[in-house]
Length: 233
Image (cartoon, rainbow, N blue to C red; front, side, top):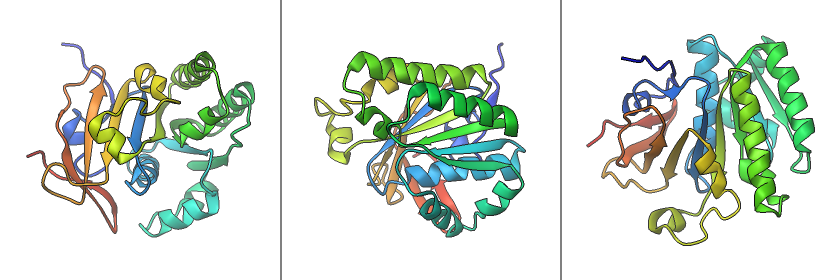
């Protein structure tokens, strides 16, 4: 039996539905609409990595203001400014116009300098907005995730979608970034309604390579301590 090494999220309940967490050194997509908890999930993944698993992290923002992101984190008791001073979690703001070569160069430098093991991109869809050609989007995303994998880092890419498009599979949904789902090792969808009957939100892992994951929606809520996933019904 082949043992698959895992990168635990430390998020209450999530690791239970995917055999202990994301596959180590994989790239993973987290999809959801505004207010579904994507950024909270990313921050919690990095916070737990640094404080529970001794794994340094990097948060790459293409849109949210870093100062506001840090304030949001503090509302959960996550003092990232302290972790930043300790070189455990770094925050970096990229312009959507940043070239893929510049992005890769900066990532390579920071990952090596701070021994980064976890990287989050929020949201990857903003980067794709400036790429009109589908082949260019595929090439850019492939280059990005391939680089992170070669550097032995587990990554999460947040992507945006409208709730109605997620629920009914509307044609054209994620038209700019749908290729990300096919290139990634896992896809997790966060819903703004409790589809499983518990919680005010729901999460569903639609794909995770080399993992016998729970496939139905699972109840989710956001508490004062972050994301909480309920036991599957």
